[in-house]
Amino acid sequence: MRPNLCEDIYHEILIHIQDSVELYKCLFVSRLWCRITVPLLWKNPFEISPCKKHDLIMRTYISCLNDEELA
Image (cartoon, rainbow, N blue to C red; front, side, top):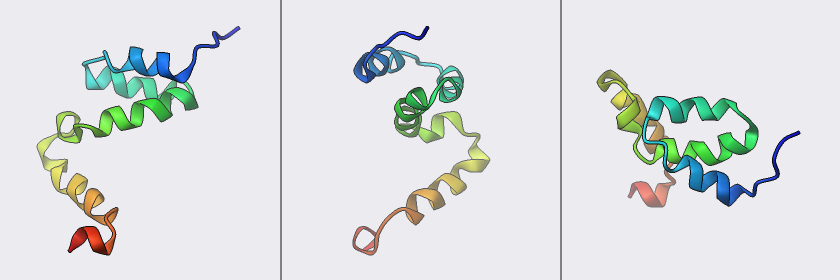
């Protein structure tokens, strides 16, 4: 039986996880946890990525911008 906690409560719990590796593991608990965790991980993507991956992260950011945001 799984508990019926609302999404806000899960969010409040997950924002207190400071370790990015542990937060990453939360992605695989359930779809709800994944939906809550992804924005938390993307708040500071350079923290969890080795330096050699920073250019890939920047390309991903830029590819998501529309023409108005690129100007």
